[in-house]
Image (tube, protein in one colour):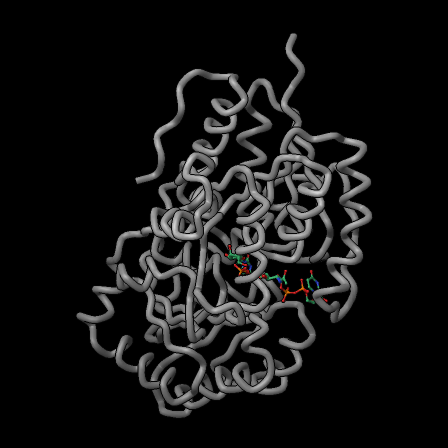
Amino acid sequence: MAKPIKVACIVGTRPEAIKMAPVVRDLKARDGFEVFLLSTGQHKEMLAQVLAAFDLTPDHDLEIMTERQTLNQILARAIPGLDQVFAQFQPNLVLVQGDTSTAFIAGLVAFNRRIKVGHVEAGLRSGDKWQPFPEEVNRRLLSVVADLNFAPTPTARDYLLREAVDPGSIFVTGNTVIDALLTVIKPDYRFRESLLEEALQEHGVKRILVTAHRRENWGEPMAEICQAAKSLLASGLPLRFIWPVHLNPVVREVVHRELSGVSGVYLTDPLEYSDLANLMSRVDLIWTDSGGIQEEAPSLGVPILVLREVTERPEGVAAKAARLVGTEAGRLVQVTRTILTQSDEYRRMAAAANPYGDGAASRRIGEYLAWYYGLISEKPLPFA
Ligand code: UD1
Ligand code: UDP
């Protein structure tokens, strides 16, 4: 029997695990591959929560997270472990996802060992190297070392082509987050977090889900977002805010200082993925600076206000599912009022089709790898 193709799949943070889980599942179910799941442990509780939800256990965990870690601490702590595991496992391919410090450093360590690198969610660009920081640079650097670029959309493919990435290395797949999302959405879903059942019971109110964690929004911008929520509540609109707060103490300090005990605001810890996904499908509006949530929400018919100045996900804005509003409180209040009170505008946003994926991205990646390594003869069709 031929030797299996050894694939090391790398995860470190919550979104990477959500988006890598369907790929790991697909490859594990395929003949001809040996899959090794390696966690850097850049996140701890938030990563464990996702891995448990997808019933995945890492084959090895480097457990690098420290409180208030700096970017260079993440890199320095991850390199020796990644290097050692690659030396032992001898993968044919290292698969990384997205634009985190984990993804970038795993790609670089693999490159230095002359191991092929596959990049899931390749080609996203905001065009501004400081926004999001450091993700825009992480993903650009990954495009330099990657041998296989799984671009989620034609827009991402075009960015790669403009940077003279080998066209033969690019395959458009759709975003694997939609695969993950579709496995957990249930019409009769019962929430694990009891506060959510309570938050969803009240009649005659509109609900806004909020998440924010980007470095650009630390400090004053985060306080502005909180201020906008308070102003809207004070204006008498029948609103409720539900905010699962990221575990980063830099984020928690501001959000809890500004919003703890405010009537109409539900603050929770990070939600288990199926709770968050099913909550998204039951709220009226989402305020977020998250990448993944921008991609998921259009599948659930919920308009999004993006709490950023630029986005590497222009497809949602072009499809009119999302509006880029930044974090200035006055603007956030004004746009929220408009969308919630003008039903035509609301309907247009809610009805937009999802440009990010169709639920078959991980199958396309699995089939592409099977074809690339000569295990099947037919190359799969790209996501259109
Ligand atoms: C990281 C990624 C970002 C991604 C985000 C997803 C980088 C540079 N950033 O940012 O691209 O959007 O994850 O959430 O890779 N913490 C915990 N427990 C956890 C997770 C985090 O306590 O399970 C706290 C720790 O104090 C940690 C801090 O949060 O030091 C920041 O974590 P880090 O991964 O450095 O940055 P994120 O802002 O989470
Ligand atoms: N998410 C989750 N629980 C939460 C908040 C977010 O499971 O409390 C999911 C969300 O549905 C999306 C992913 O986490 O799939 C996004 O992660 P995050 O916003 O932390 O990172 P980003 O996508 O911005 O890199």
